[in-house]
Structures are given as structure tokens and as C-alpha cells.
Amino acid sequence: MCAFFTTSLLRRKSPVARVLALCARLRSARYPEYMSSTAVAARVLDGVQIAAEIKNEVAAGVQQAKAAGYTPGLAVILVGNVAASEIYVRSKVKTCAELGIHSELHTPPESVSTEELLKLVQQLNARDEIDGILIQLPLPKHVDTELLLEAVDPRKDVDGFHPINAGRLLSGAPDDQLLAPCTPAGILEVLKRSGIPTAGANAVVLGRSNIVGKPVAAMLINASATVTVCHSRTRNLPEITREADILVAAIGRAGFVHRDMVKPGAVIIDVGINRVTGEAELAQFFPPEHPEHTKRHETFARRGSTVIGDVDPSAFAVSSAYTPVPGGVGALTIAMLMSNTLKAAKMRRGK
Ligand code: NDP
Image (cartoon, rainbow, N blue to C red; front, side, top):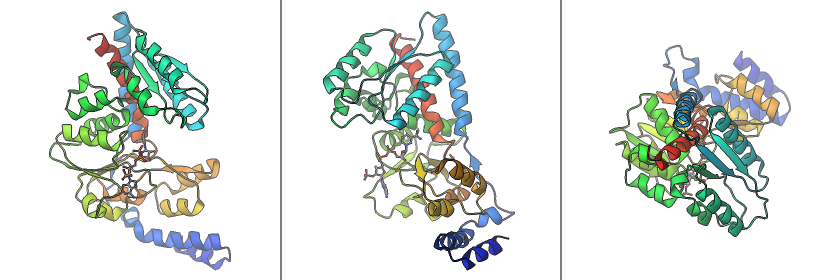
């Protein structure tokens, strides 16, 4: 059936059809597991379900806080009109409402100065009913982002970006006394709640950003993994990734990690969020024999794009467990923000 489909496409004159058919032929050589009846399916680490568990726990904690006389509160600063930031912020505010957390949104215009933003941060620092302050990034180019992030009271730094919190993380402060960055904290929750042991495991982190790569490496060290951090200057990358029991990919390059870079049976944590907008790329990552082929092509037809991570979807078949994109790590980030807001409220009150 598949051979007939590709052959008939190749016979047609359209160059696009020829490219798609050739891609499909190449793909069928890359997906032997999907066609084999003996293949053991890799476990999907369901970020949506784990996020729901965490949100339930936070909602219960918020009720306890209210019974004790305080309501955890989050202030979000959203500058200008960046469409993606507006979507993220809307989702954060909505989740606060669902969990009983007080939230307020501050929306200064694009033209706001660093000094005006500093004043706003200082006002929020001083207000007792505000437990968490989140400055939605990226900020306009003329604003001094570092200065602003450092102006946030470390006790209200629910993004965990303040140097004091970064230092506490590095020095191995206990989890309940630390505001850690949300995405890395979510990754550790996925591993913990999925029963994946970290002690003694070889963990390889691809990416060294302050938001994901470095903090997740520190957390894995704190969890007693043996950690290697890779970046764009790393030599012999595939040799290093093939040693990983736990492979965390956070580089922002669609499908970069190929199956021959993954040790059979490894756990893959795919942090990347990349939009695929080209038909040839879609066909490359989701050929007809890929289990998600139909779903992804339907999404693409509807939205003109689909989202994939930093790992080639064909590589998941080599793993023992993986976080899907979407529905993996991304789902955890807001849940951990809510968790940090409750934690900040309790820590500030010595609870
Ligand atoms: P950054 O762009 O800040 O960092 C990317 C890192 O990847 C850098 O350290 C860079 O190396 C490294 N890198 C880039 N290309 C290569 C390469 N070819 N080989 C090896 N290393 C490479 O990205 P972020 O950390 O902010 O984000 C990474 C990904 O995670 C993105 O797709 C982002 O969208 C996603 N993300 C997802 C979140 C979620 O909620 N799921 C939250 C945050 C991010 P160097 O330092 O040498 O330049």
C-alpha cells in the first residue's frame, strides 16, 4: 500500500510530490520499529497528567493557606504586545483562578522605561499580599532585563532567575527552601513521579542556557546523577549523547537529536518547542508509517503548523521512556509556577 502510494506519487510530474514520495521512502527505512510486531513500545511520560496532579496538590495547599488566613498572590508584568507572551500570560492568569491563587496583571506599554519598570517591581516587592512576581520575557530591547530580574525580591522570585536563587540551587539548598526555575523543576518532577532513578545515572544535558540547561544540570547533580552539559561548541556530540541514561534536549532545534545519538533504553526528556511550518519538514518527521502521521497532518492542515521538540520523533522508538512534544515538559512549566507561588507564600510566612 505504502509502496504503491510512493510509486504513484513519483510518477506524477509535480516536484513537491516527488520530494514527498522520496522522503516517505527514506522514512520507511528509518522506522523499522513501527512495522515490527516484536518492538517494545517506549513509555510516554505524560506531562499533562503529571501537571494535573501537581495543580491538584497546589489547589489543596491554597485552601490550607486560606484557612490559615492568607491567599497566595501572583503579579505578572507583561510589557507591550508580543502575541506569544500574551498567550502564555493569559494561561498563567487562568490557572491562578482555577487553583484559587490571587493574580493581577500589569501591562505597561512597549515604550515603558527601565526606571518605570523598576518602580513597579519595587511597589510589588513592598506589597504583603503579593507572593510572586513574574516578569514575562522577552522584554523590549531598550529595557535592562538583568537589572529588573535582580530587582525582584528573591523571596518573590517565582521564576527562580534571581542570582540569589540560582546560587542557592547550586549550593544544593533543600527543595522546600528554594525557588527553582519552573521548566527544570518540572523536568525533575517528571523523573521523580515516573519512578525514573537519577542517583548514579549518566545524564547528558544538551543546552547551557540560564533558563533550562544550567539549572536542570544543577538539579540533576543535586539528585546524584553524573552530569555532562553540552552546547554548540561541544566536540563529538553523538558519542557523548550515546552514553546518556537520561538525555535532556534543550537547544531549540527541531528534531536535532537523531536515533543514532540515543542509547537504546535511555530516557529522553525533550524540552524543545519548535514550530514546523513546511510540508517537506512535516513529511520528514511524520512519514506515513509514523503512529502520529494522521494526527499531525490533520493539525497541520488546520493550523498551518505543528509543534515538535529538539528530538527527531523517530528517536523516541529507541528509548525506554520519553516526554512527547506537545504534552510533555511544556505542560509542567505553569504547574511549577503555581507550585512556586504557593511555596513563596508559605516560605515568606515561615510555614
Ligand atoms: P537558548 O537558545 O537560550 O539556548 C540554547 C542552547 O542550546 C545554548 O546553550 C546553545 O549552545 C545550545 N545549542 C544550540 N545549537 C546547538 C547545537 N547544534 N549543538 C549543541 N548545542 C546547541 O534556548 P533555551 O534554553 O531558552 O530553550 C531551549 C529549547 O527549550 C527551546 O526550544 C525553547 O523553546 C524550549 N523551552 C521550552 C520550555 C517549556 O516550557 N517546555 C521553557 C523554556 C524553553 P551555546 O550556549 O554554545 O550557544
